[in-house]
Image (tube, rainbow, N blue to C red):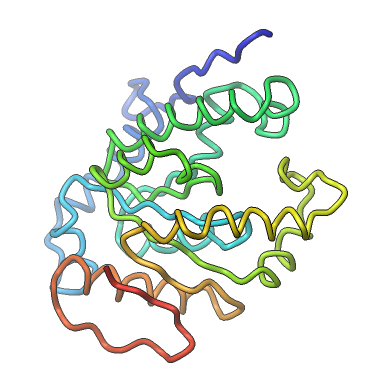
Length: 236
């Protein structure tokens, strides 16, 4: 079976020089980083993070990319979607990788791409639903990042994933049964993340605010305001 050549991602140009997209993003953010940052939870988080990244994990449909983008804006960090980087490296879409080469090959490439992205931090990184299941990837995330599990109930996930037809794992006769099985298998592993935040049908900015508060409390050792009772936030 032919194997996908997992190339480096597409490259950007800054100041007439060609550079990888993450390097280009970091260059764009350097001017912001050089400016004095007023005291704020975001500034405290950045200081405590150092070179580490923030990695969002969890099932498909929990909002990792949407929440991640908004967190990145709040923290003035680049946002990276691992699935987008995988597609750029492979030169094909994720459904195409699954169809042509199978899930095992996809997972190998996914692990390599995430390892590369973690070496280039700090960023806010959204990962695919199965990425955190790989032990070596969990170990790299633990060493190089702070992880947040966006946890959603079965019904919330199903309402969201029905809107899209590009989920290779849900191309089955029983998508609901597949989601149930995946939740049973994955939730005990997702629980190893540093923080857990409930993803539910509330405004995205509210989830982002809860992530920022949880990060601040976890990283800075300060007592954050108690979140609402319906927020399943577990600080570890």
